[in-house]
Amino acid sequence: MKTRLPLLLLLMMLITPLAQRAHAEEPAIPLDRAPDRSNDLVALQRGARLFINYCLNCHSAREMRYSQLQALGISKPAIEDNLLFTADKIGDTMTVALRAEDANAWFGTAAPDLSVIARARGADWLYTYLRSFYRDDTRPTGWNNRLFENVAMPHVLWELQGQRALDHAEDTHARNRPAPVRYRQLTPGTLTPLEYDSAVADLVSYLVWMAEPTRQQRKRTGVWVVLFLGVFSVLAWRLNAAYWKEIKQ
Image 1: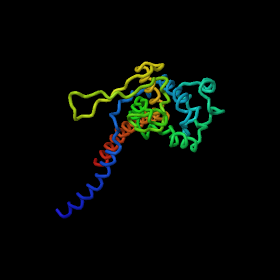
Image 2 (image 1 turned 120 degrees about the vertical axis):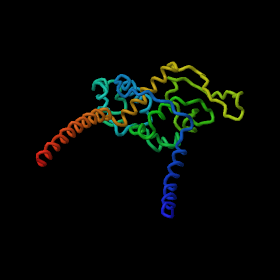
Image 3 (image 1 turned 135 degrees about the horizontal axis):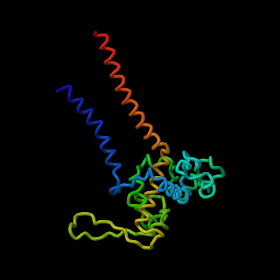
């Protein structure tokens, strides 16, 4: 009993910080499931176009080169003619002219590099975040986000989605519960709500791909490695049985 008590205390000391961290990182609102389009080259191409046209103005992707877009089926001339806006050569990395000092002065923080943002946040978080912006005149940018309250980033996709406001509907069934929150469309966007959600899914899928461009190849290689090890294990097992059979005789 005396031996178990210190072990129990040690276990509680290890579990408590992990539980507190998990509670602290719990999202403000439930996350929506992001559609997985990692095997859809057309969707990834659309996501790359959205990323370069809307995200690359402030966010860099220093671990990504324009030439790597050829893995998505985009030809070199198409990249140079349609996607190469901020660099002179196709082999350059995706950097931006916005300096960290200017970003801190204008937005209060430097824009994070998006090369690894999908690994840090996850696809579901990004999908929910890009669909949770609303107008907030109290914020310097005029925008806020339900998932990331008081975010410094403006809603760069607002022309596609339109402008929305939070509509706090009164809950007549349970007065002691928080009222449900809905969005009220102020101005229409160039896309319908379903089209916008699909565009965000394309963008998030591209961000996931950009975080690890060799992910699909790694998975395919892993399958072949497992199959090889399985066949090799059977052969080694039979060889071992035949070897010891001769020795025993």
